[in-house]
Image 1 (cartoon, rainbow, N blue to C red):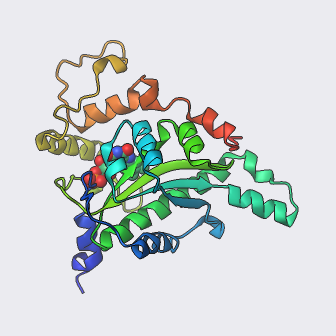
Image 2 (image 1 turned 135 degrees about the vertical axis):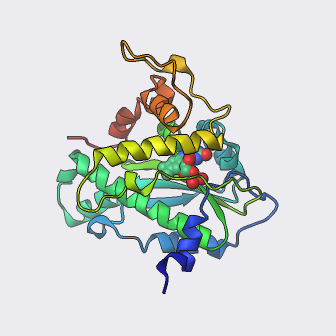
Length: 270
Ligand SMILES: Cc1cc2nc3c(=O)[nH]c(=O)nc-3n(C[C@H](O)[C@H](O)[C@H](O)COP(=O)(O)O)c2cc1C
C-alpha cells in the first residue's frame, strides 16, 4: 500500500480552517456526540482525561462569546460551537472522594499536562468532524478574556477555556495554506538550526507570494525595533508577520493577563 494515498492522508492534506457556514442547515445531534466520543479515544496523560467539551447552544451566550473572540462572526454562525476547556475540577472531585490533599494542584505540570490532553482531544474532534465532511475552525480567541467566558458559562473552579471549536457545513472554503518545509519541523536524529533557518526563509517567500497578509498587517507601532537594526529591506511575509505577532506589546494580542486569570481559577504555577 502507498501510505501517502490512503483516506486519512487525503483528508489531512485537504485541511483548511473554515470560517463560513450554512446557517440554514443542521448537524444531527448524534454527530455532535460522535465527534466528542472520537476525541475521547485520544491518548491522555496518565489517562486522567482532564478536558471537557461544552457545546454552546444558547444564542445569547454564543453571541457574547463571539464578541469576546474579537467579534469573529463564525463563532456565532457555526452550526456547532464547542468550548474546549482544561478540566482539573474532575481531579479535585477524585482527590476529595479518595480523601487526599490535592498536592499537585500547585504545580505547573498539572496545568501543562491537562492543556496537552485538551489540545490533543480538540484536534481529534476536529479530525472526526472533518472525516464526516464538516468544516472546522479552532478559536483561540476564547483566551482573549477567559474570565468573562468563565462567568457567562458558569464554569466551576479549575475549568479553563483554552480553545473554541467551530464545526459546520462549509459555505465557503479558503485555499489550502502552505506549511513550513518538512526540514523545518522534522529531523532525523538531531536538531539542525541551519535547516530551520533555510526552511523559514523558503516559507517566508511562499507565504509572501500567496498574498495572505494583504490587509492583515500588524501595526508597526505595536512592536519595538532592536537598536541599530536597518529594517528598510523587510518585506511583509511570514517572518515579518510572525515576528510582529509575537513581539507585539499590545496587551490584548499578548493576552498579558492570562496567568492571573488562571491563578484566580485555581491553577498553580510553582
Ligand atoms: C489553538 C488554535 C487557535 C486558533 N484560533 C483561531 C481564531 O481565534 N480564529 C481563527 O480564525 N482561526 C484560529 N485558528 C486557526 C489558525 O489560524 C489556522 O489553523 C492556521 O492559520 C493554519 O491555517 P489552516 O488551518 O487553514 O491550515 C486557531 C488554530 C489553533 C490551533
